[in-house]
Amino acid sequence: MARTILVVEDETTLRETLAEALEAEGFQVVQAADGRAALARFRADRPDLVILDLMLPELSGIEVCRIIRAESGVPIVMLTAKDSELDKVVGLELGADDYVTKPFSLRELSARIRALFRRSEQAATSVNGPSIVDLGRVQVDLAGHRLLRDGQALPIKPKAFELLAFLLRNPGQAFTRDQLLEHVWGYDYAGETRTVDVHVHWLRSTLEDDATAPQFIHTVRGVGYVFRRPSEAPART
Ligand code: CA
Image 1 (cartoon, rainbow, N blue to C red):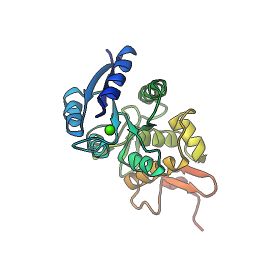
Image 2 (cartoon, rainbow, N blue to C red):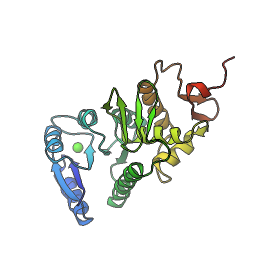
Image 3 (cartoon, protein in one colour):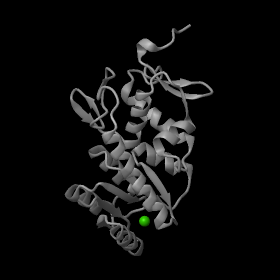
């Protein structure tokens, strides 16, 4: 079955060009020209991926991203005209998975879309060890790609989940931010190491009783991050 992509862009020419190009690649495409229409289409069509322009009439791309993310873990690629670090951090905190800065090539966008689909497939099929890992406040369903609290799925960004799953599968091993970018975001991701920090910050606020004194995801000064179970932590001095 063809995957469905929702293209949200108010510039008609760009939206239609994108839709045509994606259809030519075998995707089914639904379109929306403003933020409200985007939410309506999202709820009606349940797309497999959303391409979301940042500057939109009615509701901004940031608002739309926040609302969609509260309802779903669907991969979101943001289109932005501004290539500033601030926008990236804001978008990542809201749960976008990737960015393309205008002007972009269709080839670049298409490569990113395929990478996101590939990673969500891999995450769904590769299971090592127990598929549910209990971290106390939350349970991590590795096979189902979900974070659970009291049996209820919590909203989680796909990248944050992949980062957590990667660290869980390599307990006790410290990784640099660059290594985490490579493993979780992919070799070709032109991201900033700050991206990793933003996701770790979010995971801690969800997993930890006290995010300022983490029990699971520890900072290794001068290196990066490591996952440890509380019983495996080195004794405090
Ligand atoms: Ca726009």
